[in-house]
Amino acid sequence: MQPPAQVRDRISLKLECDGPGWPRVLLSEFAPALGERGIAEVERLVAERALTADRQSWTGAFAVRDLREQLAEVSGDVDRYVTVLAEHLASAVQYQRIAEALRAAGRRDDAVDWARRGVAANEGSPYMDRLRDVLVDMLVAAGDTQGAVRVRREEFARHPTAMAYRSLVDTVAVVGGDDPKGVGRGGAARAGRPAAGVRLGAGRCAVGGGP
Image (cartoon, helix red, strand yellow):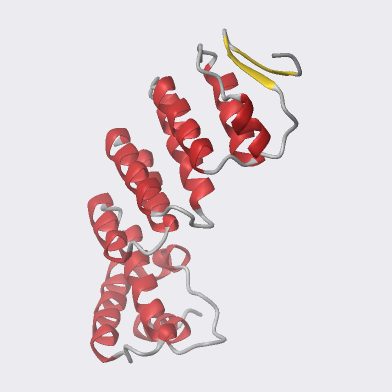
């Protein structure tokens, strides 16, 4: 037998807000049981908790923000979801979630714009690689192959690592277009590779030892 809706609502709020140690609540799993009235009650309780939460408590602040984001997600309103996520653009993860939500809604241009903004705003973030991959994937899907390669090339120019080099070469291979500029001997060497000529073009990628 399921507990009354009000009890379920308060349980879900308590689990999330009165940690640490409590499991994270996934409202998408509770939504069918809560129903519209239950979700509305959770929203009321979250708004109430937001007014009384200790602003110095990371746990409380995170829980309120997390539940507000989840409530926006289960609402099915993409614009609302983006607006709530955009209130806390503290890492590349938020930009990625926004971009992926917009892409899923068929709003590719908006998704690309948010992904670009995230890449520009989160230099050095440990979560940047995934966001950049999302951006490149969308550009390739949109037919903007030059833009996709440009994203990889710019990252390689900033951070000439082996990973950035491989991502650039792989992207050029995927798009199958010409890239007459190549990566360059110096960049490949800085990425930890031996001196080598890198040819990117005519739909192929090759690394050779000759000039």
